Image 1: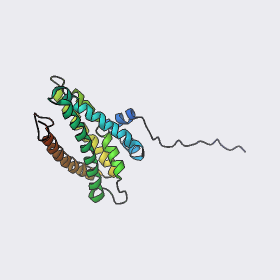
Image 2 (image 1 turned 90 degrees about the horizontal axis):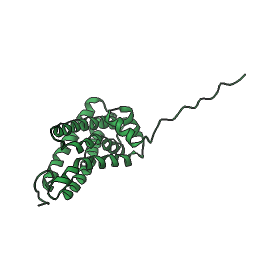
Image 3 (image 1 turned 120 degrees about the vertical axis):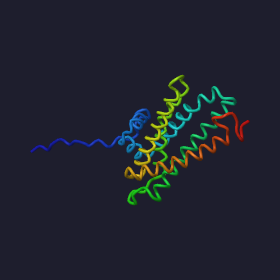
Image 4 (image 1 turned 180 degrees about the vertical axis):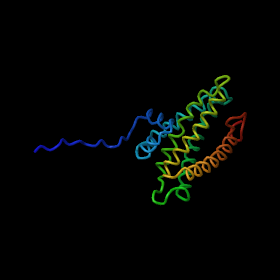
Length: 196
């Protein structure tokens, strides 16, 4: 009697390409978020996504603002600080209140997911297109908020309500701190405390 042929099960895919992951995150595809969460090496890709988003957001500052290059560099640094702060706040809120006790969130995973969630901000490079630039900026902001919500919910293994609560609190705290820092540095306006 012959034995049937052995069919090997393909292991889950990890280490997807950066572009595929960015597209999956932008499409709010939860399997892509879950893949990113499982991939311990994805943090490097998340840093690249944050850098691309920060550069796209600040390129026009570098071109048009007085002391533009310095302010754009400050904007890139603030984007990284905002990402780290948002991811850490969402993680902390999850460990305290919003994630199930059987699945405590991991800070590295949360930072990776929230880093990828900044992908729609790459559209900010089109923000100064006449007539429609404001609309592009608004769409990119709302889209980024949706990707951040999905990242937090998947990162915390939380239900919709707890994911929304953690995202809202972390986003609000981050927005206030970011606005204060930007005002202090004079980013986005004609001057500031540290920049004349």
